[in-house]
Image (tube, rainbow, N blue to C red; front, side, top):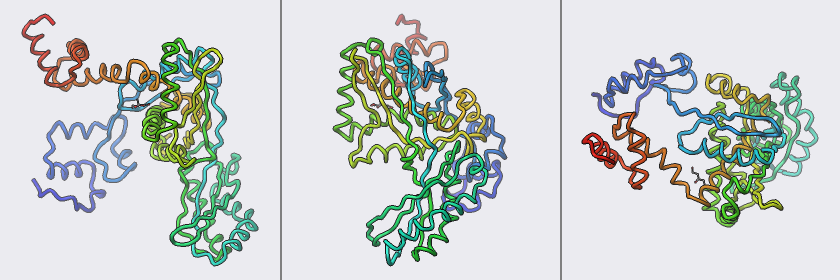
Length: 426
Ligand code: MEV
């Protein structure tokens, strides 16, 4: 064994085998662990090695399907990648409650991203603003020269927004370059464009530019979806009343709104991951949007229709692409897009919004009735039984017993197993 130190340089230059060997010298990997590292699934070693740096293996997660979704009168089966039990089943359930009333209506989502250019050290802010506006066509032209293909397909830089910020380093002008990125998530396109226009902007404003980067708060790329969830399928008036109360709770309390929105993101992030999109971009955008009013708020809204059914709406920025990034490189992401059968980034975002809404309704319904733990515990108990070494054919039996006794623990699973093996009647 080598001395354990983290200052290892040149790790990236090694082959995957060599990296594993080096790691093994540091933490003594077993043969089983090395085998796990070498289980790359559908990835070839040279493929996975190019995706990020210092790769030693791949990390697998379950890939499940949510059913019953009808969105804008089209049926969808939604792939989800998530480690949490109950989420996929919950989404499918809520979609069934909405299906009875025609399913989800989602609005078209413009694929317009914001690229921010930070202009500092300006002598005359008004002069700089005027210069930018006077040169708007030139700026857009330079931006559009960066990606002729996007232009040809009808996208590209379309507009500018100028914002004035008071900072501790004085006044800054923040120029937003608005770019229609069509079916891409768009980060690469807009970042390239922002960098390309910066020299001209520095020249005309006589300022100094530092940052040139997209904003993940994609307020020009908002997905909206609405659905009516059947009162009886939800569990009756009292459950619906509970959901409305849960919504009011979230509206009034950021502590609750955070968890409320986490439930929404269970669905949206699972779809984001399944389709090879950037989950961090989606998360940060959603949470920033939730606090745009100055108070962190729920991303959904609820009311009752005249018959007492639950009408839910969601509004969330969703910068999801169907081309670029991992979407076409990752074999499972490609498959996810095939299952989804979406023809555009807008359509994918429409699905994402509907899924987020369904996920939220399902969570609130469970919380307002039997509580969330029942469903969770049934699945959790199977995992615990497995960890306890219960053989496959007895897992169901042991798990059921643990749930019944409300004791979901490895030691208890072993105790039950022992009783079964000793021939005790349970
Ligand atoms: C758990 O992953 C998500 C919930 O906490 C969401 C919520 O509380 O609304 C159940």
